[in-house]
Length: 212
Image (cartoon, rainbow, N blue to C red):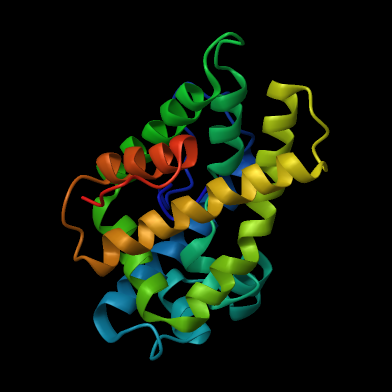
């Protein structure tokens, strides 16, 4: 949903088995991502080129662009938005809305911080340090926000394009982005789940009288 979600592309074990074509696509996306992360760690973001990524991943530059329109997209894109929204939609109908959101956020954090923690931190660090990555992240937020609007509408019965749903959804997405950047700016100190709980508390209750 945001950079908190893991960067890997393989589906969870309990998901239906994919066909050969889709498995090949996932393998290619994973190879491109792995090559990109390795090169960035070795020589930095700016010095890493699409040609180098293609060579390391053993694909053509045109293949890289077919999967990822920009270098920034390689860093930011993942496959987990639909799964997280599916998790949200599956929560009990009588569960308090904020409790449902907390569950889904902790689901995302658990995956991000246990599956590939160093890759997750790299993505967050690049958002802070590289203006092009941060700018592209802001652009892609609208896509995730649109998906969240659909989930919110399905849960509340409100229209997905209503002002209230749009404001709520984008406030949540923007808040989670700020949590990611705050964590990275502070050298990943503290527990990410606790930071998200603090953000969710602000969403629910407004600004506290004292800041921790």
